[in-house]
Image (cartoon, rainbow, N blue to C red):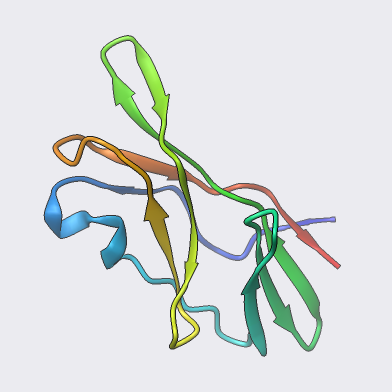
Length: 102
């Protein structure tokens, strides 16, 4: 079964839109964790929702360049992003993956 947790494409550019500034909160979650496969697991009383590892990229002159990245679980149970090396002067995008519910 495919489910949506409610987030759309996230993008950022320049310092004020750095990935470190993005934090998502999932209301109704009893626990949030990141799997060994870098998927986000949101545990609720109705079951688990798995947000698969996002695809992060930057538009470049001749197409798109994939940027290494993953979810980051913060101490306050919010979820952010950690990105590898990328051009901070250019826009980056994170495409929400499909979710599964179980």
